[in-house]
Length: 120
Image 1 (cartoon, helix red, strand yellow):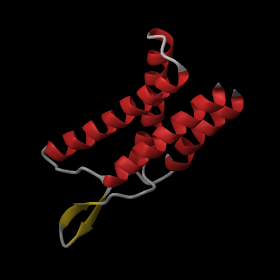
Image 2 (tube, rainbow, N blue to C red):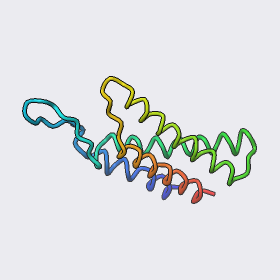
Image 3 (cartoon, one colour):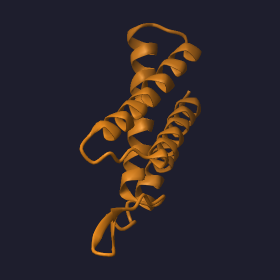
Image 4 (cartoon, rainbow, N blue to C red):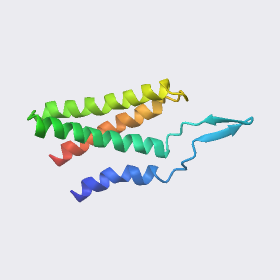
């Protein structure tokens, strides 16, 4: 169990050290930068992994679904929320949807699935 916790917290420790400033100044105007190693990506990764676990728990324990179905529910729940968040970001005032955020969501889904599989 301790190994699983370490595996889950490692990305947070690595990505949490990145500089949180996501703007760069070019020709007097701030331009948003979408860095791969940024706190935002770590947030997406960890939240997606957590949501996979939450979806799995709800499907497996509360709705009595078998393991495979519960994994599918957890992955679908997490990634659909990631897509919804990016759609919301795009429709918002800033219009800052990011494919890199979706990639971090996908990695988080994979991490959540791996933790469920290893913990089983």
